[in-house]
Length: 422
Image 1 (cartoon, rainbow, N blue to C red):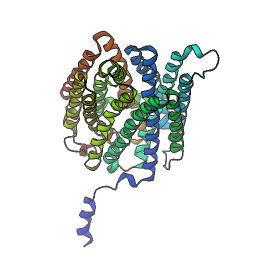
Image 2: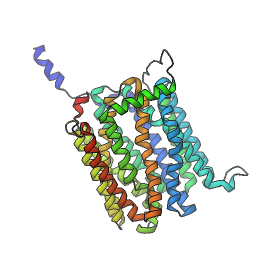
Image 3: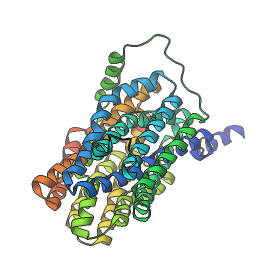
Image 4: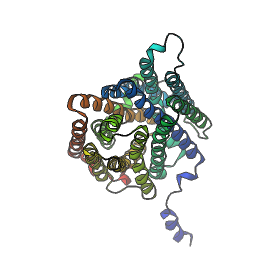
């Protein structure tokens, strides 16, 4: 009788990740940090465009953040693999608090004497600080994810994590837009600082075991090189990261939303919050579906199809002149991107050994996280050279080209079934 019962027990689905207190604590840290960062992102875009009325200035926001991010990302991954991860996460959240308070001082006109004439410069300096602290947020989350869940829970955990992340991406811009329209930018920045402080509390009180520190110190550049070689040799991991990086680099239109709203859609800051939130709303819908039905078979083909759909939605958005249609197209692009996020996150967690999760997560951040900021700069520069609408159409077409190239040169990714990585 016991022998007959064993197969039935093995056939049971893995326990829900939501039963893990450590996973819930990690979700709280991620949600609060994202909420804080997104409130700042939507507010600072409006702030800079209000001061400059220049699309290129919007692109420079991304460039200002991505340069320090690039400089610190690999070293952040190395530190995450050798130092207490919770303390590093807390320090990063404190950095978010500091940058938000600096921006609040600029918006409120309360800068110290002598700095009042450097408001725009101070804005970019605060954004640069955000770039440094963001280099730590992703690797800390990625490394602790594998400590609070079992391998068989990774796919569902990635989908649930995507729901939480995208909820922050929905709520953050919406809250930021409402706060700016209702009470001004200083209050929006202050709220962001308070949320970052709560994220610091959530990560430092997280109940999780951390891996032991290395018995012998490994030279920093040798350690970073090991992580880079691992990613380079793992085609499914490298292909997924390259696909996402270039699709976001060329297909991102979010940085230009203030210009679209002002010059084409003729709306105000509340519409900015709506359109910034629309892609995340779509991602939430698809991630909720995938949390119940995690993708396994045909995951590689599904990933390629989703990124192609993303490019088509961006082209449609560029051609739209109606607010409701623009919002629907951005929501559809978010649904496509949500599939990409879940599949890519699951690949990274399943394919990466525990002792180098920080380094691999930092490399992933360079590919994925920095592509948003580089994409913002590319969008601003392309808009300056080609015009607002043609530049976004060009980006969508380039995304379709990236999908075709990835399908051709990464056959292992194209044929991937996630069950092969368990």
